[in-house]
Image (tube, rainbow, N blue to C red; front, side):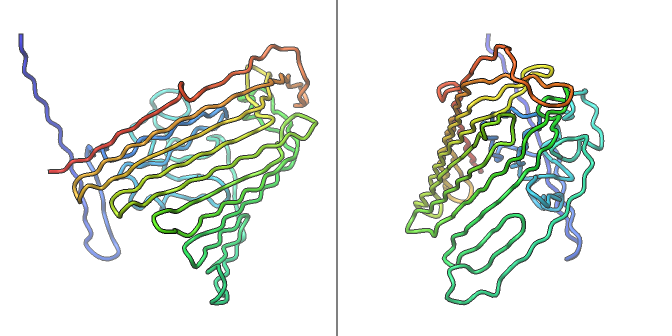
Length: 324
């Protein structure tokens, strides 16, 4: 028996600009087929993973809702929640606090920053400008750039790691990061980034962490490019909550790989292929019980090491756009 069925769907985009000072953009039942899917993520923290919105109807003028001043990604309107559930896990009720994004939803805080931008540099100097705040961003005249960031953390009580099961006292720490974007040479452009830090954890033997990544882009033509990114992170004490007042420190090694090809076949056709692989090994677990004073005490609890290899977390994405 042969059946026949058909369906249709429709949407609309509205753009109204009566003058140079006012603009209205609206969409009804938008087509998200052109939006790129999310990358692979492994998040062991209590903080919600932030995903940037790639849906065309939400990317325009999105900067109006950013209010991050320090090294965070706070937003007044987190558009990824549009059409999704509330972030507090208490049901489908959408409240005002669910509209934005903060590192934690129950925190009231204020921020300030002091910065200086330097543009009056000699004409024969390699850099065109320096932007100095808690971090630095320097633009080179050859199209490259240099970025650095320095963070110091005082000893503090952290109740996020334990998910509210007693605040955990962690030691002071800090990290330094530097990134360099190189001038394009021929079809190729490279970027490198590295960081080194002292973990603000529980161990008394000053555990450290480091990371390194390299990315390259082969611009074969204006319509076709190939991108490759590789990264590695090593943390001697990655604290992961287990249950109640039990946390464990792992020696974490993480490996990331991403490769993509973007091909604009004319003005109406586009083909994107992306491969992502993620793997990690969490070894040498050290269990800690958190006392009433917030101090960690080494315990005899049994905590197993764990791992995730590339063959278990491999993602291939294929997106094709064809317009008549």
